[in-house]
Length: 463
Image (cartoon, rainbow, N blue to C red; front, side, top):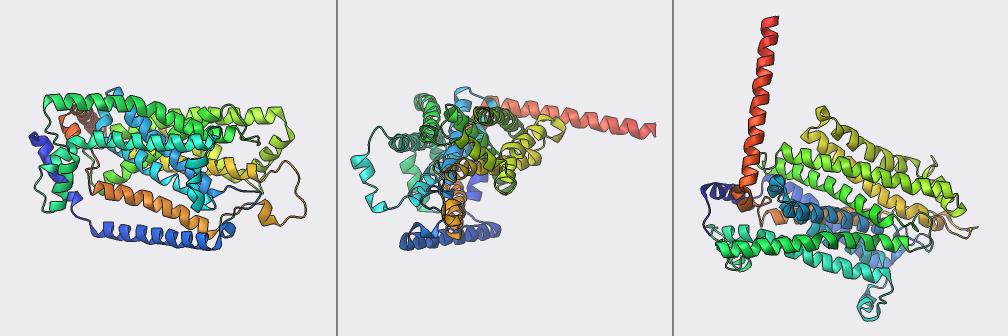
């Protein structure tokens, strides 16, 4: 595959990072592996001793595992939405961040469902779900939707990577296994007009498919709660509420991933302030929409004043129970990103990333608050019960498996970046619209710097 000089230089830059690991990288890799092995140990303890080592009991049958499942599936949705919509709309600044968004989709969709398995007992009967599953059950819908979504996401990521795979196939690597693997995966792509035309058409089709598929996945997940007659769950707005929350948290994860790769791999010339500004504005708009849904959810519950619903609300607003969690998840974690991003003077790369971290943490806490307070509020009063059977407390085993999932998410990102450039090299260097956008931004920065110098000179002469 013939590349222009810019693409060749970019390929040299990324392949140099792909074939070596720095000392800090080795240290980070060792820490991740230690956390993952700790999770494997915790899993062995749970399998041998049973669910008694977790905080789940007959009353609170779901716990932190389900919160993790909803969280990971949620952030996967933003990757699919952003990469699919930006591709279909041909947004000029999309090229450097689309692969990161696609990777978030695939990796989080792989990790999220594993927490369902951790929450279940009798995994030896897992195949009964396929043999005896009832189509009337929303849980079976969820299995089918997530399986289809993961398959579509992998296909979309692969199609979007073929050009770079072909370029890497022709690169003189010292490792023969790399050359053989890239040759196999590039499927004889040589970049001619006909192949590019077919590839672009396939990407358009997959983008059009993946967007409604992502909406369907999180809607089905919301229906599992909405179709259950429990306070805080039985709501008609849960599907759009879950979708908005998913995109909100997923956009935050994308911004964090951009910041990390920009720092670690020195991608300042690829991932610029343009991307942080635009994604920050998207995060702000989604935050406002999410705040509206949150207000509507609690307003209608409070106004209805049903006894069972009010008991859950009392828990959320009780200083001794969940008030501080609720304040962080529903107020601070939503308003702070909106305020910081709304005003241009506060809108820097580091500030946008910082509020993204807060938003992501807040959305995880919100998933926890959706599940636990509701399950701790039974319809029939429980008397003479031990506190651990009424109130849920996360155990060390659950924390270890939670952190192991996060470590696996980061590790897969790291390994993927050693196999394929984190930025779509061929598309970035050959995309004329993105190149012209960078020239416009560079020109604006230069003009602003000249203006600031003139102001300083005027102030100097004035003194």
